[in-house]
Amino acid sequence: MKNNMISKEDLEHLAQISRINLTENELEKFPKQLDKTIEYIDILKELALDDSVKLDLPELRFEELRKDEINMSDDMRLSKNITEDGFLRGPKMK
Image 1 (cartoon, rainbow, N blue to C red):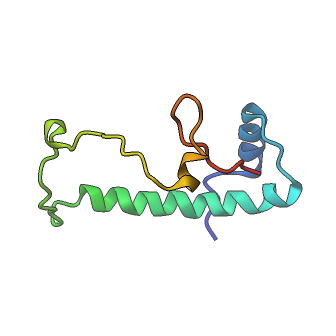
Image 2: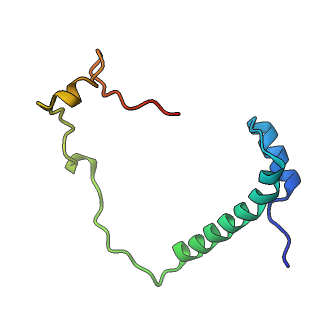
Image 3: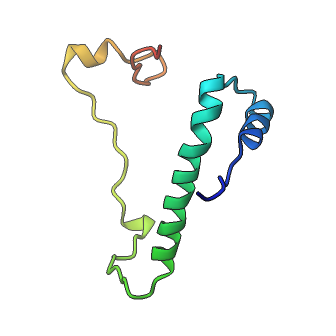
């Protein structure tokens, strides 16, 4: 079995400086999950450096992008959610 890249102590330190309260269960579970995530990112880095995969993507130019235009809807449901400043009000997050 290989050693974890992120230890429980490292996670406790990161949680403390980030001001995140983690339960004992989370402190046991998260290092393993973070290790898997880091391993996956390492695989993606290797693929990104592999010259055998070429993507033929067109170059994106900002002057070719469409203009942002505001189109007001006739729908009354939408207009009741517009703030005085013209912003769309979404549902409150819980």
